[in-house]
Image (cartoon, rainbow, N blue to C red; front, top):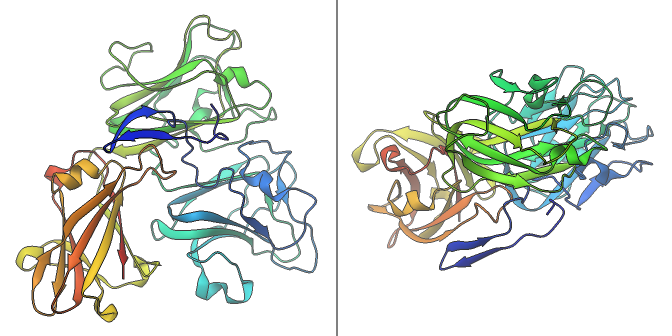
Length: 439
């Protein structure tokens, strides 16, 4: 199966019993169709999200009366945008002063963007031909319905060969503790997504069997998903393989025992595999056995998504579709909400509020009471009640589960919502949490 197909999961009483969607992408931008641009172009605007990392097949605007060119993608739903990677072309030597903007709105008005859009980050240095760059949003993940790439340079084109957008945290970029067979093994995770034949930005094992590439993540990690970018024109070089994980073996694979994250039969340009839940380990390998393919193994870029042990807790609040950076948030030390994070909801004067707590693999932790949501009203403090859950690990592009809490403040109204996390009760290594307060 490829990322272009439609995937379904069969659930029985909330338990996944048939998984046909473990190769659903975690790239929010991939194959999205609602795209708009500042001006007409002879280069297709959807080239930027087609999953083909070819620097000769790109989106590019024309130079015309529009001084600052832009490209915009609107998602089918809201996502938390953590990081964005953009690939430059063979010809654009002026990729600089490009800004990434996010918004909870689905239209773009350049005249009023400062009111509707939040700056995620800016490319301030020149990006060379054929090269890519990843930018994390400066203020943390941003709740977004749309993302705009805008060229701040007057009278110049905007070029995007491919753009990737993620909620998940990448845990492998530029880690140097890698090993493998053949040439350019350090190129597999150097954050360069170019996949055509110009330059030496992809690994190649040579025509040997078996063959492998591996990385030491340097600490115990929980691995959610792995994405692989293939070299254009030799798809079998990234086919007939398996992605495996080990917790205690720095030796070359195959490993005994090993944990299988996923397998790839027929190669494609861009492939993602979601690991089974609770896939823990320090070492990850891409392995091709004897007889798999005489062409060997090629990796232009690997992205490993997950969490690592001892990660710090991160909480992102959203209220009225506004990110927490624009909302009052405080840590207090009193009563039963000591050391809690909170958000002010008093201006909404609601007697009842439903809050959505989101994160990867958090449902079991919610049921284990690792999270306590508390509502402060104008007369009392009450625990919010867990009323429902939704498993997103195999079904959502961002892989986020949701725990729904109902906060009842009657007979008064809610003043503030608190979140208290008992880390000793958490059943996964994930420490990235998002709360949407529906008022």
